[in-house]
Length: 320
Image 1: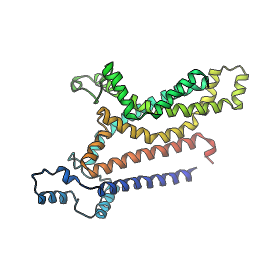
Image 2 (image 1 turned 45 degrees about the vertical axis):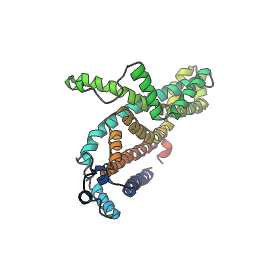
Image 3 (image 1 turned 135 degrees about the horizontal axis):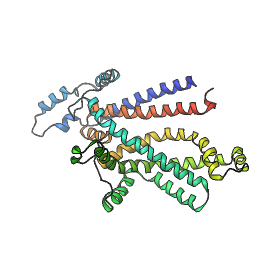
Image 4 (image 1 turned 135 degrees about the vertical axis):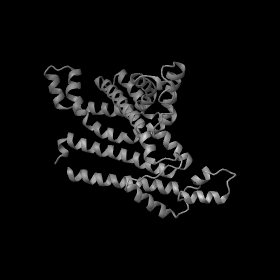
């Protein structure tokens, strides 16, 4: 098991390097650069050239790549062209907000998915099973921006229960700690619900199938023969065994969770990595794009590797 996890870790590091390098060359080879974005029409070509030299954009691409790679390995992510600050400071300010949204979105995804999957597996092939299966498939198929638009129309404008955007209102600065916490929770509700709804369908479908497989096992028939109720047998006997494959499903859902969170942040003006990415791509801020891509890729790869570790620990067959 240890050798397999070490091989997966080495492969994960290679994936991070490959994605980061591909992003660097993709951005570097795209026509235009930051100097053309920042350059005022009244600025002379000589001034724009000095701007390119200042940011190192006049050097050959292989020199820029080797310099970036050496600095990245040492932990120096460079300075953001757009924000005029070190990239680490920009990411350190945005990353906690993205983590907050992703964690609550994942919590809602698992809670809704587990509830739907259990209800479907309790009475399979019934009217409620077909109805909830249709809702699960619809949630799985709908893109995040469409779910966000529906929630905004329903819960922010038609019935103004939650605020439509941002993380807090300006007047929240004068509130107490608990008041600011409640204000943040109100603004977090719609983005987190959007992330949760877009992922709960897959969790529900996988859990339903896994539970139906477990219900056909001999130990379930033995539990029912001993007088155990269907509900108790489903929750206490089938569910723990059915949750084991869900570790793999959770690992596979991490890329969609992260990408969905970034899209949702732009829609709801949530001050996280999505907003930073959008501004960086628009301004061709190469250091910020590179660092953000490496960070997001590393988070996804680390999550998948941790899912492998958890699965290997939970399944005795993988320990040999």
